[in-house]
Length: 368
Image (cartoon, rainbow, N blue to C red; front, top):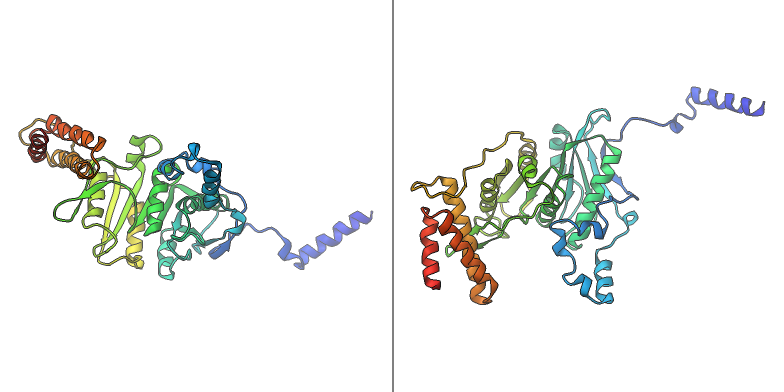
C-alpha cells in the first residue's frame, strides 16, 4: 500500500513539472560541443590499425625481429588511453535525429575547433564536424589516425549519419594523415579533403625543378574497381605554398585521372601554406559532394601511329618512373637500376609510337 502511495506522489510531481529535468529527452544536442568517449573503435587498436595500408609500413620495421625492449618502446609511443582524450564537435542547429547528416572527421595540425567562418558552410551542407584535441603534428601519426577512427565510431553512435557522406579531412600534416586513412579505410571514409598535405603518388623532380608523377601510387585496401568508382578525393593546394614541390598537386591529380578515378578534384587556391577561408572551404565540401563522375581517358597500350592524349600521358608516367629509379641507381647502384630498365622496356613494348618511347630508347642505348 505504501509503494502505491509513493508511485502516486511521484506521478503527481512529474505531471506538475517539478521533476521535468529528470525526464529523458529525444532532442539531439546541437551547436559546439566538447565531449569525451570511453569506447574505442574496433579498428583503432594498434595491431588492427597496422593491418591496413599504408599503416603497415609505419610499424617498427623489424618489429617481429627486434628486441623486447625496442618492441615495448614502439608500443608505448603509439598507445593512448581514450578516457584521457577529448573531442570538439559542431552539430548544425537544424539537425534532426530522423534525417541523416554527413560527417567531417578533421585531423588538425593544431587546434581541433572548427574556424568560426566555416560553421555556416557546415550548416548549409548538413555536415557534423568532429576532431580530437591534442592531435597536432607533435603526436605520432598512428595515434592521430587512431583517434580519427574513434571519432567516427562514436559520432555514428550519437547521430544519424549518411554512410555515403562520412569524410576524412585535414590540413598540412593532418591532410597527410587523412590521405592515409582514406586509402586504408575506404569502406568507412567515402571521401577525403586533403588540404596542402597528402601522400599519394611518388615521382621525382625533372631537370626544370617541377614534380613529375610515376606509376607508383597509393595501395588501397579493398576492391580497387569499386574504390575508383565511388571514393571521392579532393586535393586542395596553394599556388605559392613553399612546402610543396612545383607541379606536385597537379601531377597527383592527373595520376588519379589516368588511373580511372571517377571522383577526384583539384582546387588551387592563390595562397601560401595556409588553411582555406570560408569560401574555399565550402568549395572543398561541394567537390566532395559532387555526384558527377569523370570519364577516364583511354590509356591502353597502343601501336597506333597517332596515340591518344591519355596514352601519351600514360607512357610518360612509366618513363618518369624509370627516370626516378635511375636517379636512385646513380647514388645507390643495385636493384633500382634493374627496375628502371624494366620500365624503359615496357614503354618501348607497349607505347612504341609515343614521344616517351624515343627517350626510353635513348636511355636504354646509353645503358648498353
